[in-house]
Image 1 (tube, one colour):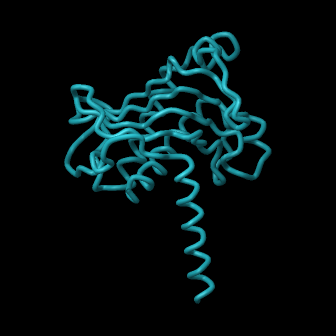
Image 2: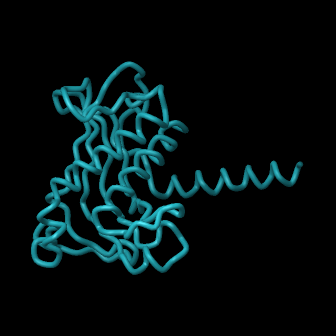
Image 3: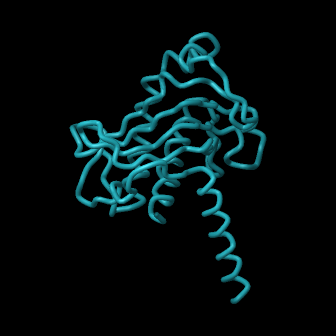
Amino acid sequence: MMKKMMLTALVSLFALLAQAQEFSIISGDPSAFKQKGKTTNVVFDYKEAKRADLSKKELGDVNVMDYLKENDPKVYNNWDKHMEECLEWFCDRWNNEKKTFVKAIEKGKGDYVIKIHADYIDFGNVAAAMWNFNKHSGGVMMRGTFSIEDQDGNALCVVKLNDFRGQSNRTISMKYPTAGRRLALFHKGLAKDMLEFLSNQ
């Protein structure tokens, strides 16, 4: 029994250390997220981001949308559709994880705005997603910020995203890990892990 408790404590410690590497508060008070009964819109601010290979810590200077238009027109042409799905997955996980936080809404005007801003995006790798047993291998990575703002655009809390990597697949799913699916899984994982991080602040 004692060994089991120690193992559980170690697993929790490693999880917290991993989160500390992926997230760090830049400014403001994280309690701004913890307002039961309040609502928030969610905005993805990605179109000025640069493409990068974050798994190798290599930053690029090519605009994400320019890169997709040239190299992956299928994702480029379906970008708005992908973002709609990402919003749905993010809001679903955010609202189901913690009931004491602001509620994310997909339509209408909320009390606040959660803004996810990307400085750099790594779209991951489909081969790694398919042939590696780690569910995060080949997943989308992002470097940027995660903030909550009032409706006047004043930032109440800003969290740094330190090369956060999302899942590329699910162990119970055999669906092909397309770029769109990897993006959706990234946002679902971001909602889950960000809530856990903020809960410990």
